Length: 115
Length: 112
Image 1 (cartoon, rainbow over the protein chains, first blue to last red):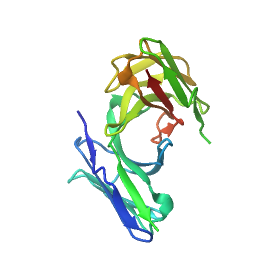
Image 2 (cartoon, rainbow over the protein chains, first blue to last red; image 1 turned 90 degrees about the vertical axis):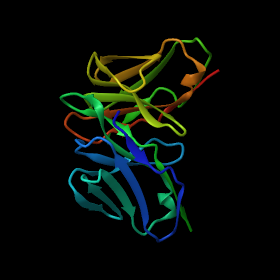
Image 3 (cartoon, chains in turn purple, brown; image 1 turned 120 degrees about the vertical axis):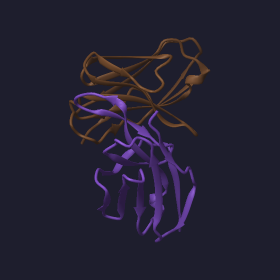
């Protein structure tokens, strides 16, 4: 069973601080990783994807991947109260086809940004 | 913009009823998915379809079946609903060769 593990939190950070969210995965052959954000009562939306070792930056978000350690992280700089949500880490699951694949999701980390 | 719609936001059914959850996407995506989301358990894959009439079981297919007669529509069927199927059901779609899954708004199903 391929697993994606996250600390459930809640992670509480003050407004303007850096929030650091972490994720580990069990399948060494996974090549792509995703961070989804889910607001309470809403469906998940993709915020970052990463495929190569190292950092990938997009605005206030930075995804970091270390395949040797099987570790993915998401940094949110200058955190805002509107960033308060659950963040889901995901990696490809076992269900593949020629055109796509399903995802294994972690259970999510709840982030609370306090004013 | 990709749009994934689900037939109901909230649904209440009784034990033993047959339940249909419908999902429609408007972007001609090849792949469609059904997940359920429960507190403490996260999102779990029920079924996956990569083409019309094609399906694959996910991690928790027991008690569920699916139908995909048209490319844009993927239905989840609970043949005989049970209380342990009370959950949030999320549909998603994915264009072939792409990575971004787009989720529908979800259906919160309560089985009494």
